[in-house]
Every structure is written in C-alpha cells, then in structure tokens.
Length: 172
Image (cartoon, rainbow, N blue to C red; front, side, top):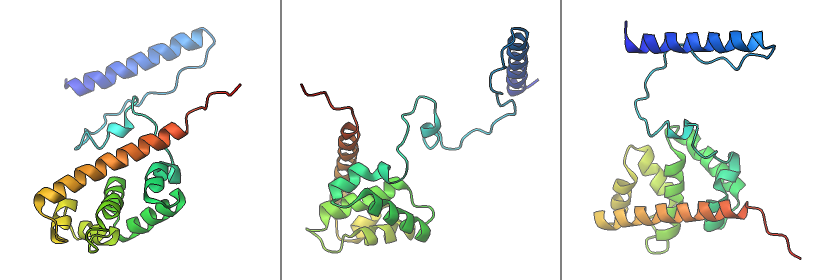
C-alpha cells in the first residue's frame, strides 16, 4: 500500500473516531477533514500565503494603503490601476505591479523613459523587470540595485501602513 493511501485511511479513521465519540457525548462532530489526496504544489513558495500560520492579507484597496501613501495617490486609485493592468496582462502579479510603481516613482525623475506603463509593458512582453529596466537605459548593476531599493521601500511602506492600524494609546 502506498504511503499516501495509508495517510488518507488514517485521516478517515481518525475523523470517524472523533465523530463517533462526539456524537456519543451529545456534541456535534468537528468539521469534516478532506480525505482525498491533494496534489503537491509545483511551487511551494506560491502556496506559502495559504499556510495556517501566514498573516492574513488585507483585502482590496486596503492592501495598497502603504504603497499608495508612499506614491501620493489613494489606495482605491492604485487598486483600480492594478485591476486595469491585470486585464491587460492576466499573469501580472501584485508584486510586479507594486515594483513597477515603486521603480517608476524612484527612477522616473532621473530617467523619463522609466514609467510604470513602460515597466508593465516589458513584463507583459515576457521580460523580467530587470531586463525591462536595462532596456530602458539602466546598467545591470543599477537595475538590480533599483529593484532591491524598490522592494525595501514597498516593505517599509506596508509596515508603516500596518502600524497605522494599531490601537492608539488613550490620552488622559
């Protein structure tokens, strides 16, 4: 017998055992456990947000609150821009979108060719963000440094937005 089959049988037996003990005690059984084998994820990092110990992600425009503040626009406007960009490129990730906006914000004044639209267009054509930045005139080293800085900026903006939601101490 395969190990996965033994696991599935074990889970089923444990679930039935808990349900019968609970019903004997007059309690409702716990929620059903999925007993069919699950496929293994091809990219474990992609599914890490689904793990039970992952922090809950804000929904909708709230997830853009910190980034939007950093960029000087409303979270709703940034959410709408993301949805519009996703219509043009369904494979676009939130991270790519945020990076494109941060990079354009950080580099646009130094190089007018670097815009959010130009970066998103490069990503849509199959290039990485680094390749796109190089195509817009940055060296490989400068593109890598710009991506690192954009990631740091986005992370600090999200942290700042998260601390805005913390309870304020009472004033006497």
